Image 1 (tube, rainbow, N blue to C red):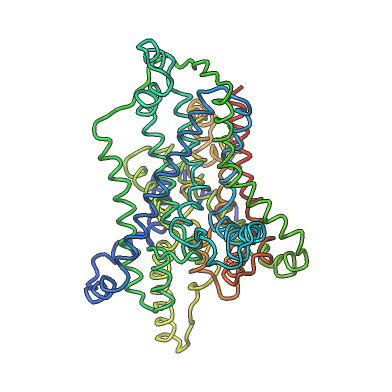
Image 2 (image 1 turned 180 degrees about the vertical axis):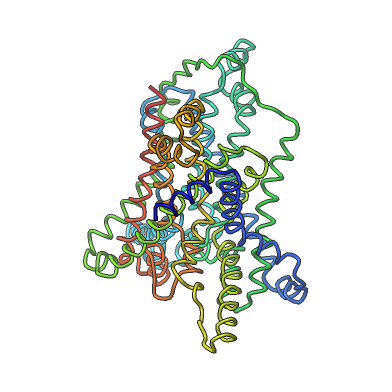
Length: 552
């Protein structure tokens, strides 16, 4: 045993060992994406003719307008609240600075279910209006239908604007003193300084947050499906499972994949040769002190997205859970929670180990091959969960069939499907989707460790592997904890990939919420929805603490 351990450490201590490890992991995790890309070159003219004649235009139109609506909404709310909190002084500003992140804890599909319960014909809002104003039926008045494209836009905007807010606020705080002072000295009022100086300088950060929000929009399945809005995500699921057209589903996934990469490329091209450097001085302005109507208006603007994106849905869920405890927290709830915890725990353990190995390998040998391999392994985060699910089912199905064919040939027995529809396949889907989250956290912590510690460890006779275990691992505790927390929360909330890849009769809290809400049984799903929201609060608390400490 000791000899095998020494041989393994010696193998890892060589450059070929770390390089081989990183490349192997990268190839494995990029197989689903490469499989989808390969689908682009498959001759499927008949499939595309059928899609073009039936549903493709609907998918294109709904996906486009959904992205436009969410993009405008998140950019407007995120940028305006970030500017108010960062550069203005008004009552409640310090509370709003972290509270504006709270909607991140609630997935959009949970908001969709709660607002549908509130705003439907038999919901408390319309029932109260009919009772108050004496209306007898729906013919007596007009009320907007929440189960629509605009409803999906509002739900997604309420939970995704914090991506823009967080990055825009950081950009505004980091803008140098002299840049904005010059605009003031030239006679610019606060609005003119914002539009002519601060906003253009913060464009990279705003566009980065907007890109994240739009990618999450494309990834959404439950919200648009519940509201009856056909997009590429719902189309992939319906084509694969409803029509049993795997080639057509792959083609749709490939189209959506190309669209995502085109979105990222378009932003970079539109930026052109522009650069957004700051001057050396990074002192912050004292801020615009607001009073009277302006102060009240600023507080109101910051309060609205928090209330409608977190507190109102949370209040509805708490009331439903309180009124229906037996239905909400029955034995099935604990079974689904157990399944979710198993999946999240397995994914966290594997993703953290892989992230540490890949980040440390890139630190040891920062060559082009290492960088490309790391980027390939992390590109799954930019893809919708439904695309990754389709990309995983194809190679795993072929692998299972190859094993079955070999077993039949050599032993005359059938092995069946060993990996398809198993927890292994589902955890693999999570790794492809969320490894980038763990990798970014570990890399950020690893860059803070001085190279002199590596040199000192080697002078004492420690090889790279021993240095990682005895020196770096204790110092990476904060980064590893952050990575584990973020991956855990993401897995708990993930729905599209879970819905497609999950084993038979192995549902999670997210699946339970989706199934019960689809059957209009929101009261029974309230406990599972609350559990997901409470777990989602963990990273929000981390971010809030960082914001609070940085503002002191």
